Each structure stands twice: as structure tokens, then as C-alpha cells.
Image (cartoon, rainbow, N blue to C red; front, top):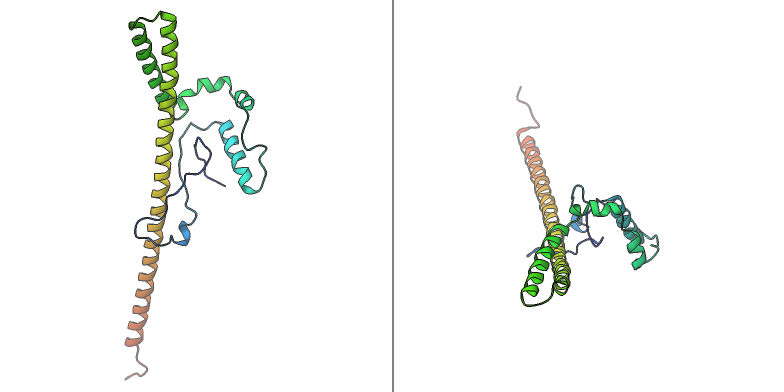
Length: 191
């Protein structure tokens, strides 16, 4: 079973390759584990969507590759508006949009536009500012997820190397101890 991940695009982050100096990753790193937990940000609907998108990869056909606009509108529930503060990047996007809308609307009003026209410009500034900040935040999150996956991969590799070195050291100590015991044990007895 896959670990619960709060991802917006329901796709695992892409890895960039082995660290500098490495030729091929060890066997335990071929499929790195990705850890990401955001408490309280996953709704049951999102979990179902994530499971449905991975179902197509396991051999089970998904019902459609892209949802329609009507399906998207039907998936919006009243409770979604009550939990908007839990959606990643929503707060940043809305705050930037409010600021951009206020600046554009007031600026347009002071340059001589009538109030309704200035309000339209303010709403456009709100939408544009919100969308730009949302996309920027999502890009930062994708970059952070990829970096976290990379860190986990490197940590797993280092852990395996450390365990291998410990096993080799234990094997060498055991062989050395057996050699010392054989050297001390004689095949004859004086008394």
C-alpha cells in the first residue's frame, strides 16, 4: 500500500538521478520511498481521487483519463469552502489576490475611471494575482517534494552503505577472533 501523500497533481515527484560521483544506485534505492504528511489537509474525496488515479497503474482501467468540467463542478461541495484554509497554497494565493485587486482597483479609480469600471479592474487584478501566486506556490511545492524525495533516497543509500560496512567489520572481527583462537589452541598438551 502506498503512503498517504498530499499532492495536488496525484503524481509522484520525478527524481533527477544519482548523486555526484555515484555510478549506479544500490538495489534498495531503485524504488525510493517518498514521505510527505500534511495533517488535516487530506479529505476523503481527495483520497478517493488519489486511489482512483493510481488504480490505472495497477492494471485496473480508470474510467476516464481526464475529468470533464461538469464532473469537476459536481465535485465541489459546500464543506470545501469551510476548509479552504487547509488547502495548500490557498491562503497565499487569496492574500496576494486581495492585495493585487486593491492596488489595481484603487489605482484605476484614482486615474479617472468610474467606480464600476475600477471594481472590474480590481476583480481582474484579484483573479490574476491569485492565479499567479497559486501557480508559483505549487511550483515551489513540487520542487520541495522532489528535493525531499532526493534526500530520502540519499539517506537510504547511506544507511545501506553503513549497514554493509558494519557487516564487513563484524565479519572481519569474527575471522580475526577465529584465527586468534586457532593460534592459541595447540594440538598437544604438556600435562
